[in-house]
Image (cartoon, rainbow, N blue to C red; front, top):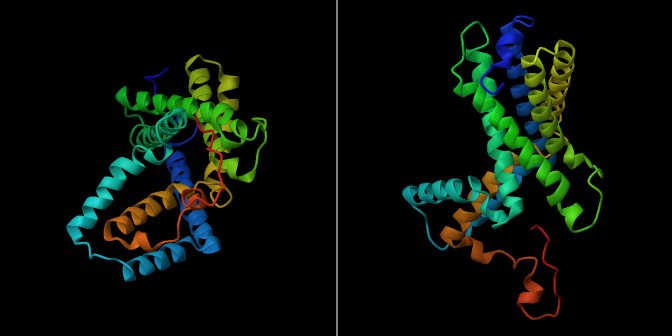
Length: 263
């Protein structure tokens, strides 16, 4: 199963160009949903104003080379390894899900646009697609059932769902139904194969069509926020920001906060 391109067999039923149009439509949904989210929450305006304030209160002016170095370090350390989560199970689950999703989506694009019209795909690309889906499931289900803050810290049941959960649940549905579709197709279970294919398509529509209501757009905001924070620390403008939320305890005002139970 791992070395078989499920989209190649699907092309005998659904023309390859329709699959390609579907992928393009999903990208457009991301753009539209993220745009609406930015307009509604005014995140871009916030980041721009924050950057302007930081520039005015900067103690040193960073050269282009220094800025580039800070950005590259942020991407390599903070973003690529999710260092903000510290060392623990939560970070491992997040990294599994993040890189699994990247491989899953990358494999989908390659298999659909390059190897769904009669060209036999090298086994590495179907493997990337399947391994990505498996990693997404491992990280996502581990997070959902055991590591969510409201489950571990507030004792809420795993089936307590809010709007913000739409992203992770739709993503898990995509990976799960994608694997089930590929397995049933390879095993010759045509009825189940079509059922899981329909569920796979629906979960993609929910995932990409629900960008405005889910946390999907945060994938774009958080890297920008991390870069802005590190640039502010490098030029000294962050020193002029208000103290953090746990400042009362640091300054001896007698307010003690409970440590988050993330591990």
